[in-house]
Image 1: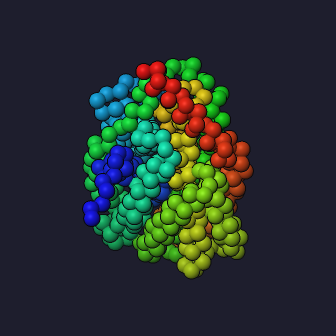
Image 2: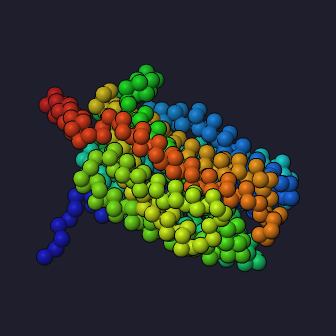
Image 3: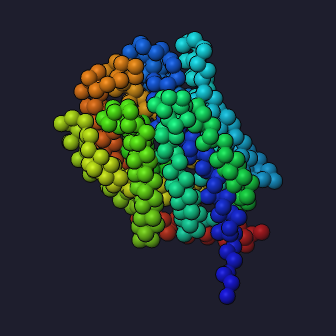
Length: 475
């Protein structure tokens, strides 16, 4: 007996496209969060031998980038909402060309020529990072998925498959530093530029192919064009967006802070000569932790609203981080059996947060439809993108503050005798204590999410359904 063929948007073609279109975006975000800081401070050859100078460059760059985000994200979100529907749809062209542009820019960012002057290198880093940051805003993955269905169950299924695929493919991303070291000339110094090329090129081709397979939905095609007044009204009326964005900002810091600081911590806790091996252990922890969290989230979301699911995910992250911080107060954690299992539990919670977090983002688009008659997916997506980039930048910037404070210079920290205790106490704050506090803040804020209760969500979707039915009758 043959299996029943699944209908759009759960058909194989659409599911494959949805599952692959965000892979290059995930890799690029991981590179920025986990490796850009250490590339600039240790391997780009910027102000070598001048203690703390390269860390200052990286920290200031990230702060400048965030100021630019405050300007460009709302503008580009408005541009997407105002853009006409093409034969591809409204969001597919942005997703396709934005993926290509961001890949070219991130490859250039991690391949700064070594023979340039320090000033020229710094200028290139700033320019490439800001342009990449702009292109990265034009990746409307959530609006594209949101357009496929208004059914929360269908959306969950659309989100689970790509999350699982991206999580398992991220095993390669988790081994990034180990692979970069293997590509290096001496087996110790990583060739990060070449590794970035090998990661980004094939997965960008796959992502762009995935975008072409998706038939964008037209459930919001009848909406009137968005204007400036609508944008102002959205920020006034969409309380779910404001609450969830603030909660998501703090909750997302857990993973971004860990990724920003962990490479420095394991490099000097276990020794630079063991960085490749420790990176692989950490990579496996990420892989299985995020995968376990994704599967657990599917189970949890059967019984609770996305808002409650986000609270549960944050609760799981807090305790192990607090324990690690207390242990680190006595000195660097050099026991693999202590560091990685506790971080694994945190990663499970972080993995759990993806599905409810994305569903909440789509709920905010639906809330616009409910209150204003316009989904304004581009603006909601721009807010979400700005939150993600704020997390990556602030976590890296605070890591940079620690490095500047201890006068960090990779050339000077070649043996344990030259590594100050203040480095580990500072990294402990960034890696363990601050994420735990932010996770707690995320929970406290999410309690005020207007769609936290099932009755509130049901009322909103019932009203959207009635409005659609009235439109059909009029036609």
